[in-house]
Structures are given as C-alpha cells and as structure tokens.
Length: 312
Image 1 (cartoon, one colour):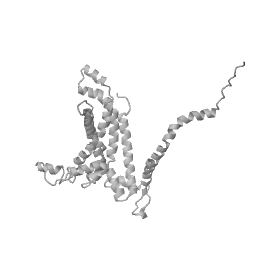
Image 2 (cartoon, one colour):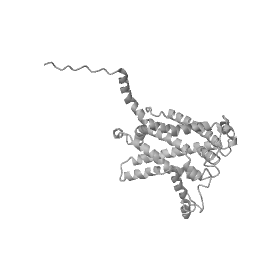
Image 3 (cartoon, rainbow, N blue to C red):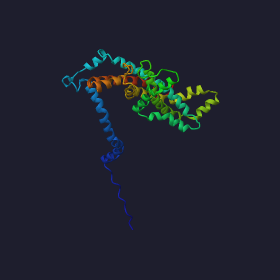
Image 4 (cartoon, helix red, strand yellow):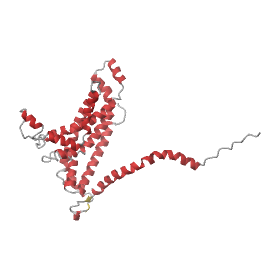
C-alpha cells in the first residue's frame, strides 16, 4: 500500500512576511495614536498659538490696534516695562525659598514616616493628605486662618501676642512669610511622597553592613541614603520649581498680588495682563519669555545635577 506523500509547505511571499512582521511592531503605536493626537491637539495647538500671538498686537477691546507687531512686544518687555523685572525677581525669590524649604521639610518627613512605629499608616495618611487638596481650596483655608477677626491673629491677640485687627496678608512686612507658610502646607507632601518611594527601595543590607563597620546615622545618611535618593530629589526639585514658578491659583486667591504688588509673580502679572487688561498679544510675549527662562534653567539644572547618571 502506497504511503501518502505530504506536499511540501507552500512558500510565503516575502511581502507577506514583511507585512506580518511589521504589524506587531506597529501595534503599540497604533494603540496610543488616539491619545497622542488628543494630546497634540490640547497641548501643541495652545503652545503654538501663544508663540503666534506673541508677535501680534491683539486686544479684543481695541480691535483697531490689532495687527502684526514683530518683535515690538519683546522689545517693550526688556526696555519699557516697569513691572517685568520686579515680577521676575520676585518669582525667582519665591521659587528659591519655597523649593528649598519644601525639600528640607519633605525629606525630614519622608525619613520619619519611613521608620517603623505604631500608627505609621495613619501618620503617612496625615502627612500626605494636604497634597490632595486643590490650590484654590488651600487658599480658601489659609484665608480663613489669616482672617483678622476669626483667624490666628485673633487668638494670638487673646494671648497677648499681638494686636486685634492685624492682617498678615495686608502688611508688606508679613505677607511674604504668610504666603510661604500657606504654600509649604501643600507642597511639602509632594517631596515626602517621592522621596519616601525611593527610600523604600534602599537595600536594608547596606545599613546593616554600615552598622557592622561602625558607621553612625549621619554617615549612613550621607553615604547610603543620599546617593540612592539623589535622582528623586533632582526630579522632584525640578518639577516643583517649575510648578512654583507658574503658581497662580494660590497667590491670586490669597493676596491677588498685593499688597502694593509685593507678591506679584511673573505668571500672575501675565494673568492680570491677559484677563484684566485683555492685552493677549503682550501677555503671550511675556509667556514666551517665561517659557524660554524655564527651559534654559531646566536644561542647566539637569546638566549640572547629572540626572540619571552614576554617582561619583
């Protein structure tokens, strides 16, 4: 009986093989394409619009003055704007003080809640809870706390530590530290969360070996903890610096930029220029300058900090 002969496998055309192999490689990009297009529409278009209007005279309340401005808006910023340099200087001061204090307090809180103690879960929840509060709600809370009739100053006056009717937000000598404290309450948990996540990844064996070698807490922190959380510190500091520079909601609700312009940051000045004065062309030019400043500072900071590189 003759055995059945199995026909040889049919050769697959090279074009079909290339098409079959290319589909799995393209599939991830096809899946994220809708989200990518949405992000492009909601992010790229507004950014390009700002760059476009920065070269225009555009004020809806004065349409007869609208038109191409060229570099006039930028020339005015650097040579004829009495508020630009003052608001930029205050913005840099605000960022430096806020980010430094938030980093120090956040690092301290992260080290504390990383320890083992009774009620640690509750302690972590209390430490991280302010970060879940929106900026406007944070401002509302602190406006009530700073209220001269029912807030902190009233209770301090009852204790003989001040005078009745004192408003820290209306005094040029106290408004800056008062605003700093309000933003610290919300910003410190951000650092604590990111640093704690990295602290939990540090191998315990390193600390045990260091104790055997006689290293104290300070040496362990300097030579073990800091190198492991360096990238977390660099990233959180950069992100928070950008957010603090662009901070509008808290200062706008808390002080409105006052008193006498003492707490007007560059973004807050941009908001007043666009929303209140309707000068969108000039506000777009200010925004472009702020964007370039942030981009340059971020690149320099990442280069100097050697983010993502090995610790020397």
